[in-house]
Amino acid sequence: MQVAVYPGSFDPITYGHLDVIQRAARLFDRVVVAVAESESKQPLFPLEERRELAAGATSELPNVEVDAFTGLLIDYVLRRGSRVILRGLRAVSDFEFEFQLALTNRRINEQVETMFMMPRDTYTFLSSRIVKEICRLGGDVSPFVPPSVAAAMTRRLAGHHKATVLQ
Image 1 (cartoon, rainbow, N blue to C red):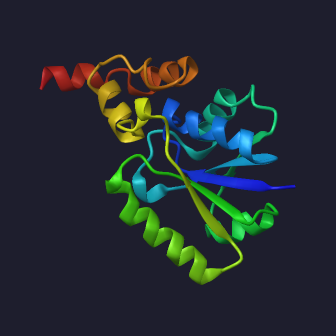
Image 2 (cartoon, one colour; image 1 turned 90 degrees about the vertical axis):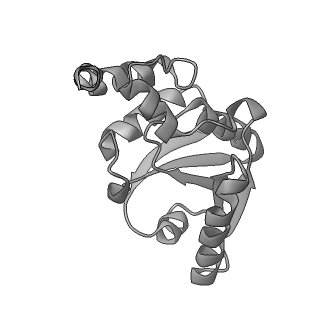
């Protein structure tokens, strides 16, 4: 069974992430969406809530599982019985960082390969950071994230927009 692990902070999961997940689900027997702790990024949502939001967004994909992890990605990939790390590339600006990660992971364990997938061109501009900023400023994020994620973001950021406007 070919298992691919798609790691990320998914803070929040976007339609760009979902596009990569859906296409990967057609290529691999199983796709594990691995939600990383990522405390250094100061996430909007805690780890368990990001995992729940991603699980809800992928619930109709039978060969996709969502899990949360901490620690070294390579160790997690091996624990999951995988040899494939799946990474999304939106633009050339992503490439250098992703390339460094892939080479570092290969240096740690050359049995694990990193595969890159690009989202559909409709989503190449989309990032969780941009979506969070739109929501913080009171904008509509429904074109960028599933309805349950948009609702969670609005609840989480309620009051933030009012404070921004009053300044």
